[in-house]
Image (cartoon, rainbow, N blue to C red; front, top):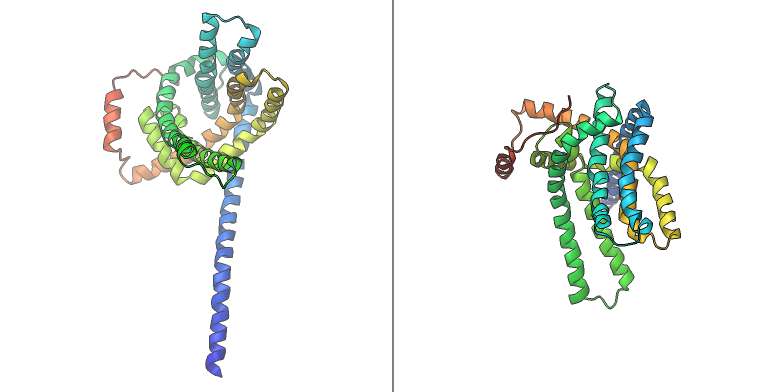
Amino acid sequence: MTRPHAWSLSNRSLERGIISFPVTQLRRALSKWSTVWLQSATYVRWGLGVVRRAPGLYLLIAVVYATPALLAGFLPVLLPAPALWRQALTVVLPWITILLGAVVVMVAVGYHARGRSIDLARATSVAVGWVPRYLWTNVHTSLIFWAPVGLVFAARSWQEGALPLMVVPEVVVDALWWLVIAGLALYLHTRTLLAPFLAVHADLPGTLAALEAWRLGGQHFSICLATLIVGSLPVGLPLGLLAFGVLRLSGDGQGAAPDLAWALIQAVRPVLIAALYSLYRDLWDADQARQRAQGGLRVPLLVRAVLALTQPLPKLGRWE
């Protein structure tokens, strides 16, 4: 009678172990992510603190640099007659918001993080010098983003023509594809999230900034993703709902949606960029200390070749 009893006890212990294993793993994962969300909220509070140092300046930056994108979006409505100069303005104006608007916020945050004051004119003049570096960095991150996303779009088009799924409703297939595309886009954007900060604030060449951002974004993916989401919510959520309502009410406003989206992004940038700046400083400072202890940064051969090609380009950005 002893052996069956011992076996039953062992069997029950094994069953409890098998059942408790996924529960333990789930608890650890939930604990980790709760810590990550709390830490990201700390970065966002720091970002709000930076914005509160000069709320008028950041509001002015948001308004001034959101205006070009808004004008581009509603120019066809304001001036319906087709003209070459209007088409040129429609193309050029959004890029003022996309490029210069982002760098101006980065410059203002950089000055305030160093305990220095700055106004709109000074922030703009300093930002103009950093725009080429910012643009060159975005060339790299755009390739990293659009190459995989473009392949998924191509795969979707191929599946739709070559392998139509008759059994599964089309709306379900479309939803699954868009879920894959959105997840991939969010992953790639998170991996390169810190590239502009490394290019402008850490003064790394664009190629190296993209490489280091990819590495840091992989090592610290969860906190980068959480800070991106939490940092976008305070301004992005209410303004996004407002913009959605405006587009729904205006039947002819669908063409202005991309430009309206860039104006919304510009409004989100002050708090988000300030929060991400704090995250960047924590991760980069710790990584720099580790690299110094290990003998410096190892740059891949291909990256060194690109850096050698772009080395003769003048450096226009200056913080002083």
